[in-house]
Length: 299
Image 1 (spheres, one colour):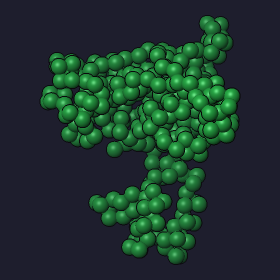
Image 2 (cartoon, rainbow, N blue to C red):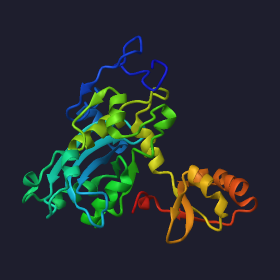
Image 3 (tube, one colour):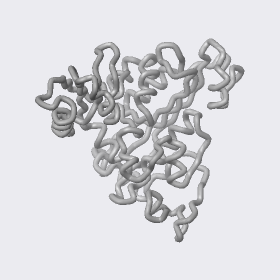
Image 4 (tube, rainbow, N blue to C red):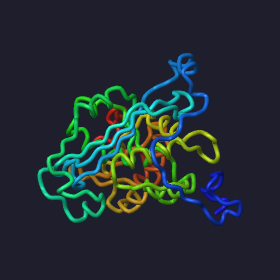
């Protein structure tokens, strides 16, 4: 354990055989240097981001509803990616208009009685998202699909960052990337599957520092959030190549009847070379489409 991803964290014993878990409550603590004088002198280096989480009645944004939302708006340093201070939080419940399934009740602890008559203040949500330069979620493709239906004018034009996919957790030795498991890896736990708890737990996680680089995870996340994506469609790929495409994390599009995946634009030359060698056995015959940054993780 001592040589694995746990190294460098104070919760790990000197032997590396045990780790102490602490209940996380509230937002991270601002750094000592964050004073009114420092804030005034470095105002141009500070930006706002929002960490967001939703609990829903199911997995399909076309049929299911948000039943709870939690948002923490916070200040961060543009260059270092360091968390500076919490700006504002919002949490709200929403009556979906139909009974929750037993699975959702067990997952969230919410009940039909607790949600009865509740309404999320979507104007408050819109106000917080409007001032954020980036919206962060763990599995942003899920959260964005639901939030855009409720505040399309704001959520649809924002830069979204995904802490699940845009931080290289596997490369750091973390084999499971669920938020609650990453929290345990880093020595803390919280009451998961409640929106504001999860949002603030995520904020706590991404302000922690990479054991190798010493930089906050937030810096890596923001850097990758600003790297352009490309949709790569393996048109006319031979049928017998489907297994290796699937292993390389291509997905099947039943409408277009082709395998595709989204990759960073700077990784495109290497991926095209792989396709030509392993799939086409010759020149690439597929298609590439640039994805605007504000379209990332959009349903």
